[in-house]
Amino acid sequence: MDLTNLIQELYHTKPIIKKTNLGLSNDIYKAVINDKKYAIRVPKNDIHKHLNTEERTLLNQIKTLDLDVKEVYYDEDTKIRITEWVDNGYEYQDCPFEDKWLRAVKLIKKLHNADLKINYRFDSFKMYHSFKREIKNPLMDYPKYEKVFQMIDSSKEVFSHNDLVSGNFIFTKNRDYLIDYEYAGMNHPYFDIMSFITENNIDDKVLRKKILKAYFDKIDDHLLEELHKIEAMQNLLWAAWANMLYDSRNEDVYLTIFKDKYSHLTKGEI
Image (cartoon, rainbow, N blue to C red; front, side, top):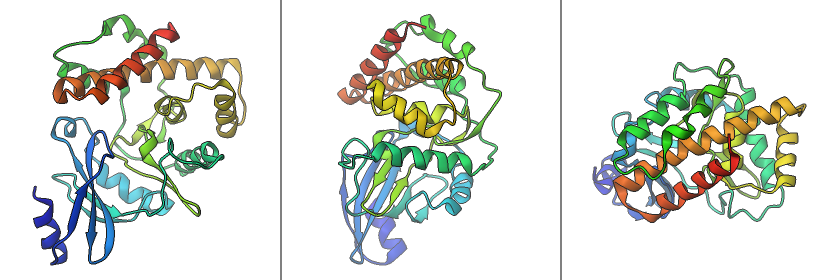
């Protein structure tokens, strides 16, 4: 879809649109429309079919939580979404605030404690096989590690974000945001906290302990064992995702992500 034509149809004015270097599953554009700035999300074709088909429903539910950036347009067919642009915002990795990890945990807890319900379930096992089926040139022996899925108790679920990469947090001096709910749905209650840790390469044991203490009321050996299993499963899941997209797009960023996930998976030795 021609974004300039879309904006002209919506606002009856010619926008200034520039593609950013943000986003992995999507292309993200910054647009100036009538002197106001907006972010335009355009899903890439090779990932579209793997994403949540009920995104519109869950976006309606989370509006009351005031976590997301204000939406001004959404197309259910193309999944193109336009939101207001946040000025002076930092994503997690680039944020200079010393308490950014605590602010991130508070956003996650706010989402989980809202006790939202949706019919869509983020099934890590099915998602993994959906990615794996698309891989033409496997970069690892996937079956060797697939037992991690059998080790996780999925009987308890909570509404989860499921994709807590650096760019899905926006921190400003006065407010924080949790954005991009394409993978959101019901999932294991520990998935998000480990997603935050692993997707942001938080390997420092002291910081990990602070994060877990901020999220959980009590930490014991059983909990740590369950978190370890979740971490291993996530590394396998996103390794397959990165392998799939490296095949499709042949961009080095996905090879780098794969290598990182594979390295952490093999170090875990489940």
